[in-house]
Length: 596
Image (cartoon, rainbow, N blue to C red; front, side):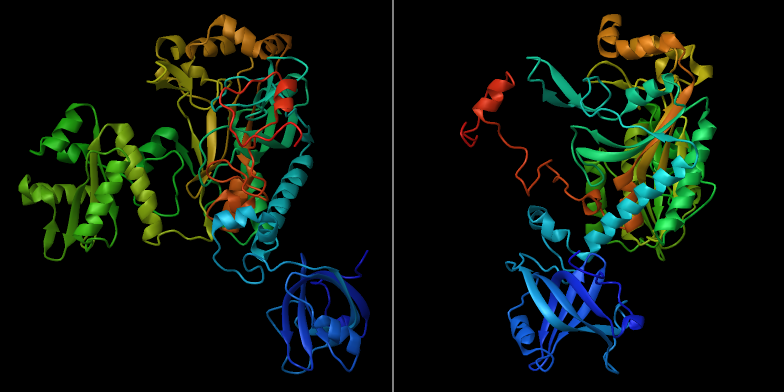
């Protein structure tokens, strides 16, 4: 080793020892006679003193040091002089008086500050990610990621789970998102697909008799990016045989309640985790991933406004829709501009408009005053449970639109009004999802989760006659408005799996071509089984208090799925394309020549 200790290790008990340290020059301060250098490695910072009286040559060499130079220093540990200690540093009671200095590598001036936490354009950070990752915040996040993965491995291993690796090169099968595909050189015209998840493989492992499997699995989905999504991601993948839904919920809840205090200072709001059915979550919060750190639940005004002479309400109810509201506390004083901004948000989310009631001291200020009596307005206010100083926001439309608009406005305003506690993780289970949903574009039913989810046994007779009302044995674990995991009891019988494929419009021939391997496996004694998968980056993002998963991912892609550091994706050479038997219809002139 080029060093005997790391830069976060030395304490007063080490005074008098001769040590060798190596790392990056974090800061350099020239006080004329003395030069002070803060030396940094992953483990911390140690102050180095260069004294011309101790070694003039070493002191002279230290005059040439600049930030981010990589150096090796030998010296003697001593107690810092009285009044010079730094209680904010673990090594703040000592310093090392340098006797030797070796410059291992020089460095260009960094394109942004590494030695202090400052705002840097994200594109620049991603372009120079290797510099960004030197910053203490990013190193803490990736160490936290490691600790979370290690804890999960140990927790499951102690409970007789076996970690099994599954292939990255797999078969392209329709599971929801678009596949990333890889051409086969040896089999012209054929392609592998990168797995969207190990779903079929872990089910086959249950058929194989392993009973308890897990994997820290890489997954790939070609879908639009957002703050909590990347084209490639890692999930904790778990599958169990001979279990019911309750067994999986208990296992996952036990893992999370043990994990959170072990790796962070976050507090879980409620244990056991609350449970909401999908219908309850959508009805009360307008979302199947509600943030339960605050209230502002949706209020159904259908009964209160029935028969009132306001055409927006009456038309929505007559068309089988809903009239619902949320109450924003303390917002009655919003200006016309703020109300217009809220209305614009509602329209952008799909609403035709937004009805507001501002409960000011002098009375209700609302456009409804032109259509409703004071008594009718009071009925609405009472139904909402609103008080003076509050702002009522009302949407009248089809249930799907009402939920989408008010659910998002609730989330936005909860954050804007400071109603959330960032130190709390409000975890909840969402259960009883619908198995299928109608896709207007494709004019068929599609699986809400995936086509291997088992229907509720009581609803099996409806699979052909009324598929839209079949419930799934599926469940999501939600925290602070994010889905951090989801799973289900799986179909383990061929006849039911074939019925499921038919329900989503898949022909027998297509089912055999796409999933023949799974259907055949079910004929060889497949046990009842189920599981769950949790997105590690999303979980770490919440534990670290970061706004998106790029902050906890070593080398992420941008919102446009581009790697700015390596300029990927990139073009292939003509030679590579020929080897893969691929012809590009519109080759860019920027493509590399064959001899690149």
